[in-house]
Image 1 (spheres, rainbow, N blue to C red):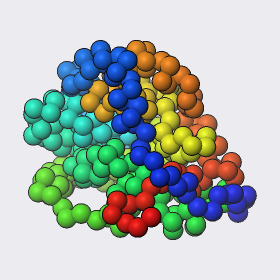
Image 2: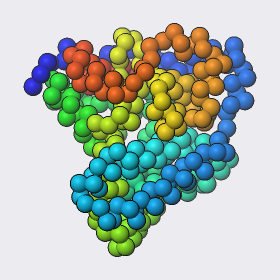
Image 3: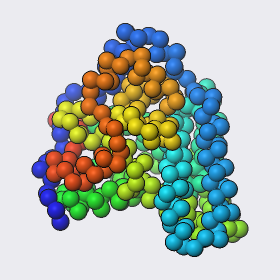
Image 4: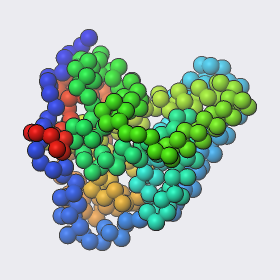
Length: 321
């Protein structure tokens, strides 16, 4: 099974999450960053082009062999669908049309969700905003692995399978750790997705549906673009709970790698996050960062000092400490 991880518990802290205080310090020194707040007028065209590319691929994939379907799903379709998931991340922060037009953001989220195959746009928003507000909270922050995950996947081989199964944990963990009643828009999201999937199967066949859904799942697991799931908050350096990545995959992921910058300023669109770093380099160049998501995956799996336990946690609000 390979080496056993050296950690036997999460890293517990009793301080507030670090981004609110750093945001205050940065804005005191660089108030011009506020000019970056708002929505990105280019975003809707980029995300729409991705959706249309996947729709065009329906005509290509339907006549391919199953082997080619899976290859295309991993190498091409899954990458685009992962980018569309990160487009839904931007939309969750109302960065497509701004905070003044919340319904426009939600409707565009339904559209970006279509090629992904699984309804996630509204549900993601419901949990993701709490991840920002209560980062590390043992109950509210469902980005944190559970004790069961940490105990079961605590060897090199175990971590390999845990990485492969990441999509399952991201789908089901919130429903177990912090269940919430479904919202009306979630049901609408589900109905729209079901209708779209039915049309795809009816007119293009099951190969195309496999291309869309399996591609989405593969690109959330053992895949270079999925490295951001681990790079963002797993403790590669003691005491640091958020990490940025400044490599080329940011070009196709709406700069989600600029993760410290994003948590510090979630009102800044992904396209402008490099400008935050340019304005305030002394706040970001001096803290640990990643240069390769593929290396992050390799190190996570092979390094016994890193594993599902390598996360900073805080006691849930209202619980005895």
